[in-house]
Length: 88
Image (cartoon, rainbow, N blue to C red; front, side):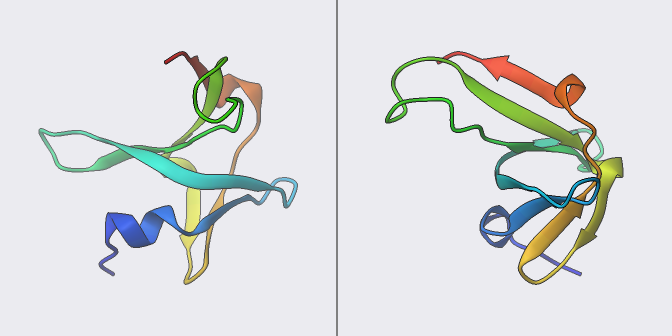
C-alpha cells in the first residue's frame, strides 16, 4: 500500500484502548538512514490561535499503529508517557 503524507495527515487517529479520537497527524519521525517511519506525531490543541502557551504532542511509535484505513488510523495509546510538551 502506498499513501501520500498529505493523505495520511487528514485521517482521524483513534485509540483502540478507549475509542477516543486523538486528533490528526501533524508530523512524522523518519529514520533518514533506513527510510523507515519511527513514529507519528499528533499535534495538540493547547495553543490560542497558535501563538500563546504550550502545545502538547502525542508521539505514537510506528509499532503501536494497528491499522491504516481509508478514513481512520487505529493506534494503541496508553497515555501520558507518550506526550511530549513543546514550546514555540
